[in-house]
Each structure stands twice: as C-alpha cells, then as structure tokens.
Amino acid sequence: MQWSTCSLALSLNAECSASKALEDSKLLFERSSDDRYKRRKYGQKMVKGSKFPRSYYKCQHPKCEVKNTLKRSYTGKTTEILYKGTHNHPKPQPSCLFTVGALMSIQEENQDKVSYVPAQAVATGMDVTLPQLNLISNEVANDLDLKRRRTNVDTLDVILVINLYISEQQLQPLNAETIHSQVHASNSNFDNVFQSVVNGGVDRLAEETDVCNSALNFYIDCLVVKVIQGVVQKKKTSSKISVEMSDDGSNKRGKDEIIVGTNTEDNVNISCKIHANKVVDDVNTNVDMCVDVDMTDNVEMHVNNVAHSDKASDKNAVKSEEYERELFEIGGEGVVIVGGGEGGEGGRP
DNA sequence: TTTGTTTGACCCGGG
DNA sequence: TCCCGGGTCAAACAA
Ligand SMILES: [Zn+2]
Image (cartoon, rainbow, N blue to C red):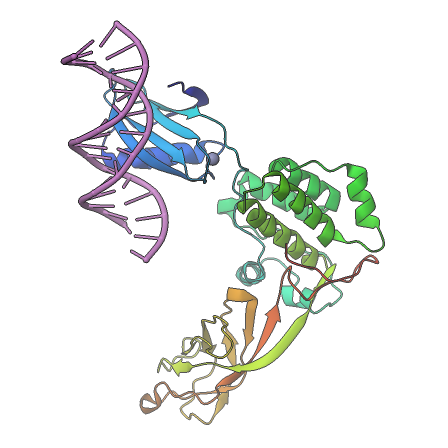
C-alpha cells in the first residue's frame, strides 16, 4: 500500500480522546486545500511505533477511489494527511452565495451602514448605479473562493468568469476568441455561452451530475451578479393564492406574529412569519404587516393589510387568506437580458 | 430517516 | 504453515 505524502502537517494538541481526534481531523481537513471533498471514515487502527491511532478516510464521490490517511507522529504533536489516488471529479463548489434571498437579508442587515441598491429595485428594472459589494460578513471574508467571486462581481467580465470556471472545474478549454465572438454575436448572450461551457464539461465527464449542479450554482451567481448590475431584468409575475394563516395571539407591536403555513393549492412551499407593526384588538381591522421573506422556491411574499386581532379570545383568527406573491425566477424562464443589445430568454442548464 | 463514526473481525502479503 | 501488522469491511451505534 503506497501512500503519497501531503505537504500539510499540522501541530495539534497531543490529547488522544476519540472526540478530540475527530475534532482534530476535521480541523486538519479544513485547513487543507481540499476540504470541500466529502469523505467518510472507514477505519481506525493502532499502528506500531505510535501512541496514536491512524485513521482511514475515503472520498464519498461515486466511483472515486481517493483515500486519505491521518497519521500522527509518535509524540502526537503533528498530524499529516497521506493520499492515495487522484480525484476523478472536480472539486465540489460551495453553495450558491448570491441568491436573491441572501442578497435581501444581507441588504437588510447592512442597511444602516451601506447604501445598497435594493435587489427589488434592480429586479423591477429601475435605473440604478452599481452597488459596492461590501456585503459579505467578516467570517467569510477570508474565504478564497469568496474573494474570487467578489472579484468577479466587481469587474464582471464574461470571458474572465468563464475561463476561471473552466480552469477550476477542469472543463474543456474554450478558445478565448470563440467565447468572445459568441458573447458579442448579435443572437447570442451570456446564458448560452455559459450553457455551451457547461455542456462541454458534462460531456467530458460523462457520468457526473454534480458538475451540472455546481455549474448551475455558479451560473445563478453570475446571473444574480448581472441582476445587480442591472443587465438582467427579472420578470415579475404575481398572483393570488390562499394559504393557511394563524395568529400567535401575542399583542406586542412588531413581535406579533401571523404564521403562514404551506400553501396547498399549487405546491409551492411557503413558510414565513408576518410581523404586525400595530397592535389591534379587532379581527376586522386591517393592519400593515412586514414580512420575513422565505425564498424557498424563489417565492417572495408581499402581505399588506392583513386583518387580525389581539384579543385572547380571537387567537388564531386571521381574516385575510389571500395575499399576493411574486415570482422571481433566477436563471429560469423569465430571465430577460435587457442590456447591451443582447436579448432573448435565459434558461436553466 | 439519513448520514457519518466506532470498532472488532477479516483479509492478505511478507517473513 | 503460522504469525504479524497495515489496511478494509460492515454491523452496531450515534446524531
Ligand atoms: Zn474524490
């Protein structure tokens, strides 16, 4: 059994409890360059010449045989990762960062500090100036991947982004001229250029579906970036649907909640809380509500003037059962490219 | 219910 | 052929 040595060796505490060892292994993988690979521990063994057990891990990816061994020095002060094999699949992408929901909550969190362009304003096609994306919390600000994304956001260049993506995901390289010509072709747009990149990658790594998934995440990120820049206009549709609502019976302004349950009519998963900004005690009185938005399934809710009551006897009484919902479909049908002479419908890969 | 860990048994090559 | 020891399996267990 030949294990190749990794350059990474960490000084870790020499304690040897099981939980400590687990913690350490997580820490070690976390600090290594490929912590996004999913691995499963399949064995642990005391080895001669060490007070500490050796742990064995296998990559979780189907058909990938990469194995890692965590080996502690005799004293237990350092631990190193040994490798066997090479991953036959791209490194998993972190999940999509720029969902509309994320943008909106970030915006909400920071509204007193930075003058962001409301995502909604962009969505409705208002003429806006570019926001500075200083909207990432400190805890993730050092994440390299995030830096990459932020760079993309600040100076989004389709060719740059695509090339970056190609190299990261080990996809079939595309000639820069090809990309360029496609980007600027009158009947082409960012969407289908990116689509062709994704297809190329999927073909090459035939059996992999997560290439597609991570591509989709990235694609959505890029589209959202475009949205921020005002290049993509989100098509907005609204309709009325009914849901089950219940009042929590509280009577504190701003804390008073109406729980909106799952809408049963059209299979949209909605879950949110409405906070009343007034205290009333008559179920027939309409009050203004602000809404905690749950972007599950890209559904956004706007609820206004819902009647409710704070009388204890009226607990759970909510008069209005209809509200308006707005659909924001990022990267799906309804994404329209409106800038730079480009046109056409977008489509999910 | 799902996902990952623990742990003793088992496998297998080398001496 | 037996024994040793690193590596792996998989049932039980845990969250
Ligand atoms: Zn792998």
